[in-house]
Length: 203
Image (spheres, rainbow, N blue to C red):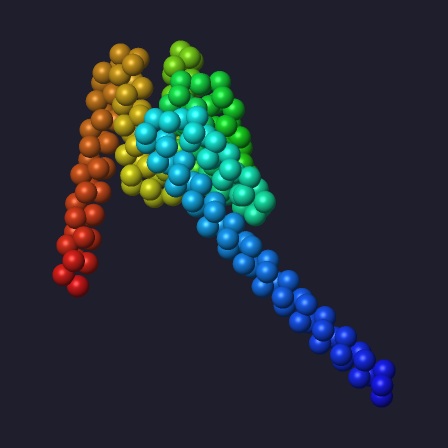
């Protein structure tokens, strides 16, 4: 009888300790997620002000937290953001490294949206290097990925980049084709967005 009482007592104490640990873990994870968002917002503001070194430092802090949380989608997203920051800072070699990391992780996770955005970045890097076949491959692959996700804005963005790419190649006919398609997509999007806004405004 005494032994049974002791077992119950130990079990209750164990459950209390376990509950406390789980609550502490949840609180810590929640605080980390908030901190992660804060660093990302900070980096975005610094990026918009062209303070690329400071933005990269904030992205690095966000990346450490994402890795601690084992949020692999966020890790891929931050790699892409770092790639874009390096590209805007005219550091294409570093940009390529992070775009490549982001793309590989996005493919492994089947995240087409990150892969598409990364493909556009890689397309620009190859275009800047004069490797036009590779640039065309990545711009076209971005369009395919955005189409797979039915991302209207992404499709328009990919079409715009293809139009600019063919303009660089002095292929005016193909450039115009993509420009017109891009214009049609964005007109369609703006019309839907305007209808949605009006509908919700008078709900």
